[in-house]
Image (cartoon, rainbow, N blue to C red; front, side, top):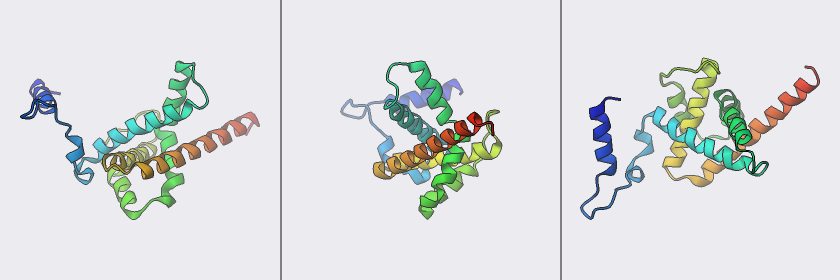
Length: 165
């Protein structure tokens, strides 16, 4: 990022209002106008936190294990599988948000296929949009459904590997 742009952002983000208070601006942002990759950025952060807290039901002492396991769960590969599992429960508006982000140009990491990466980007943008709009009940419903799908598919993979398939 260019230094001048960084300075502009710092000024915009931390400039106080007339009363001397730092303004919280995201509440006034219309999620429909936010770039899809920014929605995915927010959704990725939300899902990562959701998964980390969800894993605390199983492990409370070993941070490295929690970090490694949560990173695997929130990977593009598993998020793509989760999206395919929740797609039927989405409204048309939610599918539109997903498609808009999925179709946005971005670069896939080596750890996932291009299709998996684009699918996970759409999934994250959907979560980000719900978060930005304050739709917490729906956000938690979708995140929990995705978590359950990932858990079931991971267990199936473990069973298949254990049985030599």
